[in-house]
Length: 170
Image (cartoon, rainbow, N blue to C red; front, top):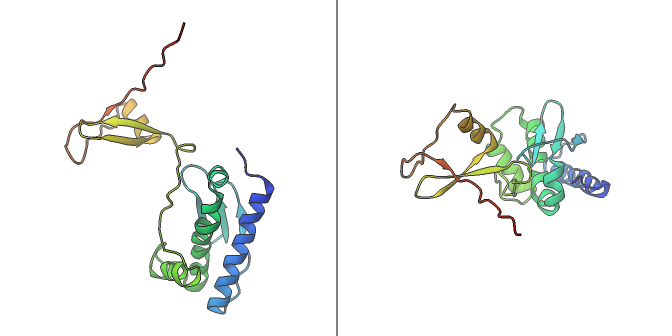
């Protein structure tokens, strides 16, 4: 499902708000970045520093608009601000953490907590002590016989949990 234009506009507006906060805090002016909605997979957003571009995942945005506006957008804008102020530094280093906390008043979390099953399916595997979720990439490697995984806790090999068959009712 594709977000409607008003949601795209809300993200654009939030990017502008975040840049204005950073400008007031740092005393520097920041050009508006190119904002795209072409991020794919589990990634909610990304900052392309040299291109001065932000990319957001339209599928995750549609299902998680509040999280995007409150956390994902400031997270990505912080990467651009840090790049403008300090150049290339650790992506989630102390400079980025300071922008997140001091400018945006947010906990500097490096990963989002959005449900990504819609954009990146997972496959259940059992070891005997717990169920493990493997990504599509890892699952395919198992199917092709390229890799075998084992549980880090009990050391047993992971065995695919077959989905239960749905019985036809007659």
